[in-house]
Length: 80
Image (cartoon, rainbow, N blue to C red; front, side, top):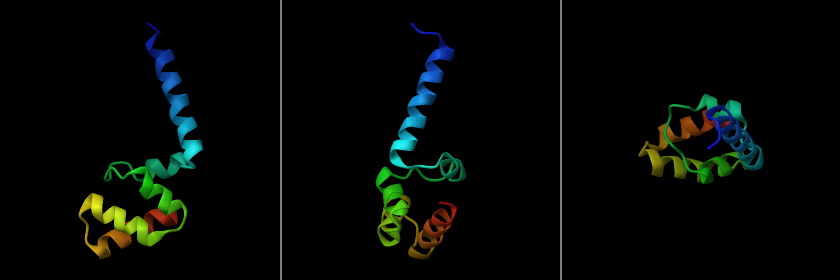
């Protein structure tokens, strides 16, 4: 079995690769930490500027009102 430090380093490289592959800025992830777990499709729509689709997904996942979802998604979009 590999040492814990090597395993953690390997996992960190894998996460960094996935973030680059998906076009996700690590700073963006840190800024929304602690919030709801949103599916990858949400972030894809957000990156593509498809705000209505992103808001719809946000509402489905969080149960937020239209106004709260719109405000949250717009705030996330500004951070991109």
